[in-house]
Length: 130
Image (cartoon, rainbow, N blue to C red; front, side):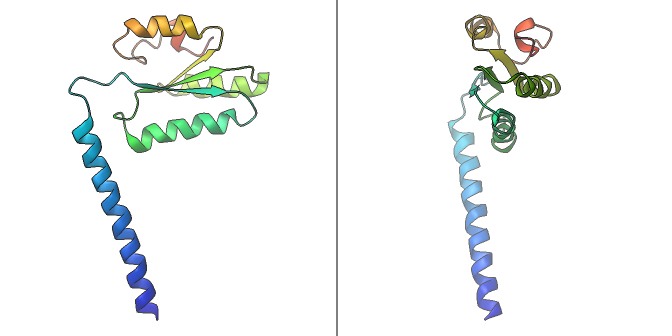
């Protein structure tokens, strides 16, 4: 009985590992030849914003820079305490760009000309001050 359960567990783990290997190979084949400039935008609206932002950051860590170079966190009317927590996360992580919904058009204009969204952390649009 124990051997059967162990065999099933090993089979499941093998299939998960194989699917991850295939996924990484597929992502390698599909990646563009030039450096990626893709960013993920997340709209932060309520008290779950910190968890949402951390989940997006984990996606980038898990899937790598082939998934996205940065997270653009857009404050859509967060409570002040939650907004401050999100600003702190952005200040501590170069992969996070924080801005308000009103500042988003200006940020998009600045990023349009940038080679990579996170390269100029001294620029007002990427420091979390919006």
